[in-house]
Length: 417
Image 1: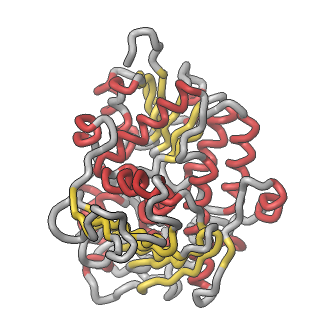
Image 2: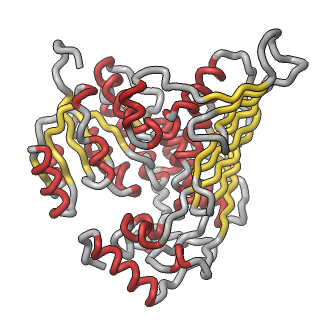
């Protein structure tokens, strides 16, 4: 950080995932406060960093700081961001930006009322080295227009690992159709590389498997995987796959008018493939090349960060935006585009995969149509707005599954229900 620049005083909400964002002095942030309701973990982290601990979010927002990082529960980001804007703070929010249309409307309005406050959507997968390289190549114009894409985020785990991340029967990971809602890790790279946004979506799921112990030995009652078929605003089509299928990995594939850009499924992490057809490639350029691109900047810091370097670049672009006063590429509206794709894909799933338009909340006239739309699979939501969490309806938890979940929760210090 240049000596002439004062540090950006920041508070972090969520002492689990939020720990990733606490040590960012090299980017000019000074951690001053942390907030969580899990008091044991909260005070442990506050003591580690020598900062103030809060269990009350409203009191946390009264702390002397310029920015907050929201790494709390998936379905809490929008209401917390709305309050942060009202308190005059810059916001970096983990995914998703919202989990209902009404939340998205409230967030867009709060952002616009805040005027000069920065919103950074902390979707990190676009910032992996090969995705940044594909964006660079696509932006050159040499490959023509984006026509079709595929992106995947496949993340299976044993039941014990899933349980340790989702303490409590109604923890969001146990009821959220995450293969559909948590689409930003795959959709985000497609949007970032091509500068397009989804405008229509069909959703599909691979249903819950009653014979798979990695699903049944716990409190989860959601389907295994989700597929979104997105129509983008330039007419291209993108297939987005997320879920707990076997075969861990992430992948991006972009077909253009004059070539293909894709990350490699085999041959080592971080490699990508560029393919041009022999009859239209520039003279002297090979038909195909496979290589491991580097980050365009900050190699050392990005290589040491999590999620393939993405965790460094979300904070980097947040700090850059605050310093410059210019919104980042991963701004509020793109965060809403990605998040609403999941919301409306789930409605498509429940409607036998019928197409649904994805509303553009840049427009107030569109927002007015959804300002009272609170539909959600959250089991604690008011009954009139409650949706099922699985295409199969309500999944009944087994005594063995609950017993295993409680055992795994206790192992990480959680003893509630």
